[in-house]
Length: 239
Ligand SMILES: [Zn+2]
Ligand SMILES: [Zn+2]
Ligand SMILES: [Zn+2]
Image (cartoon, rainbow, N blue to C red; front, side, top):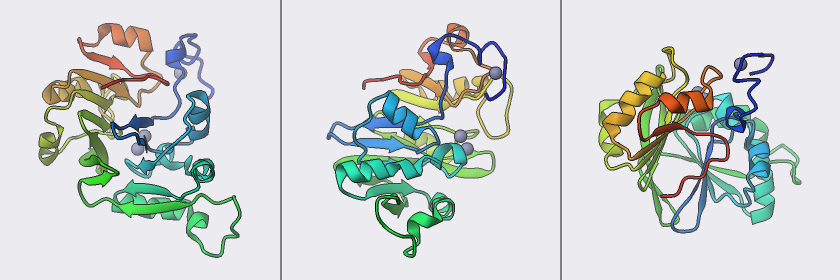
């Protein structure tokens, strides 16, 4: 956190240095799906050697999940194609507003504009041969989307999982789940709430994401139940 002198912000453990939440999913069919395009997208792609993105999945339109979208220009140029982007209706509208220049025919062309094809998600869909199942969840009062891809579920910015969404999470093996801090928060799960949701879903492995600087990596992992740990930047999980 900017200007913070707490033990986690001053920690020398690299797992305590957290950029914004995001994930890259490599499917069995050889495609790479990027979940969210936060303000750290460029730094993350450089740090972790991301060379290809076949599609973007958006959970919602908050700044920490979309503000790196302009960086997609590089993938447009490398792959010589526009980028398919999938989001719910509200998020599509937010992206069009925040990145108005990218959708304005009057903007001069020539390398400076991301080429984006926005698709509104209406239910499960396929990217190539990979089925992606949107999982509606709540972030405070705001509905947003988690995603199920095979045995993986990615649920960030979540404070409530509605009744209709639990069946979509059956037989999930690896769960990535929002857990902001110990104290309750109006728009994010606390550790206690996230542990309860993880248990109910019954995933073999759960990785918490979107933690704030209240949570030191090593000390928090040491007291989490078996099968649950904090994710960290650069973590690779195989299914
Ligand atoms: Zn701090
Ligand atoms: Zn959010
Ligand atoms: Zn967020």
